[in-house]
Length: 174
Image 1 (tube, rainbow, N blue to C red):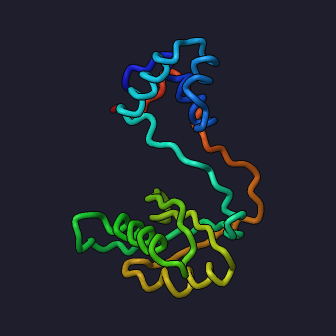
Image 2 (cartoon, helix red, strand yellow):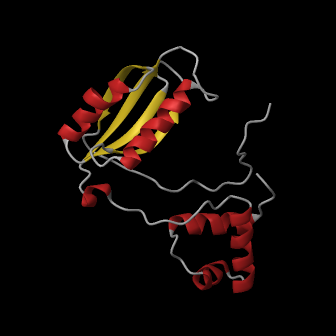
């Protein structure tokens, strides 16, 4: 973590809790001049601590009524390209679900440890859409050996902000 002081950390905390907060309101809450807060935000953006601003949209309001987590086992073969096969498959799924309206929305794809290689967070409009994704689409991807799917029955809590604490590190040190 680059040198961040208490003001930087408080700005990050407030912005991630309310991305639409104005610089004027931030400066009022922080008891700092508007120009100071604005320059700190610009610095945090340039350093990459702030990656962007976006609206948090409710998937269910847009017709995505089913949330599922899909675990994928990938074949233990060498990739034809420069990237590991797990990454190639995850990227292909993200690209295809972005481009095709007949597939569910894959919000997240992660390469993971354990018995599985890839974890997908999938939003489907219907069970038949999810079924098509699992039964017809995924088996056509070369290198996908097996999948396991968990459908979410009820979302209990989601947090879309990180706790801001002093002394954290963005990279492991060895």
